[in-house]
Image (cartoon, rainbow, N blue to C red; front, side):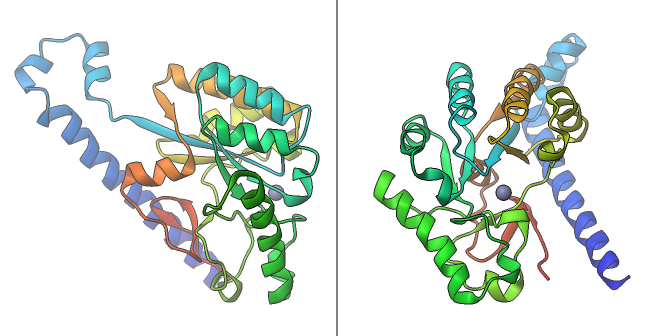
Length: 258
Ligand SMILES: [Zn+2]
């Protein structure tokens, strides 16, 4: 019961942070920049276009890279000029080094999803650090040093273990459970129902149905005025510097840890 209450409060806090931010942006892009008397002379569609807050989304892909799916996704992203964020599993890198090099060269963000997709919540400290470090070293050797943000497998980590993590951790705000649906149209429909401005969407480049869904979502959401950015860019747009050891569901929403 106590837990339930805490979650409810966090959700409300995140929602209120969102709406507060949205309201500010509407006022500044609408009334501050375009005089009201000019706005009133425009037709409703043009008026909406001019006063609408810019909408951003970050698509994230876990569990790859995988030949036959990640490369098709990269082709589709390149055709559309859309950057994404890949949380890669160390075990998947071997033999797929060219895909990591491509991600880097084509402007995508690369993050760490541990070496063997370990449930960190149950790992000993040394084993957890090794799981994170191994993938980090592989990425450093391939594409150079950087800070590779962590997405804990299953999104699960606790306060004690999180304190050991030297980078920010990224959760998500939209999860269509694509790995369970394995159906392009259902994944598309679920994301379209849930998605709002500045969301972080969780998908897996491991499944052909998810790759097809991602590309269809990009086309449909671009038509609705969304711009796709990496997770790092989404934080920059919000003016938020993420902190190491915290798990972010979005730039303005930190997920409470057990
Ligand atoms: Zn995963």
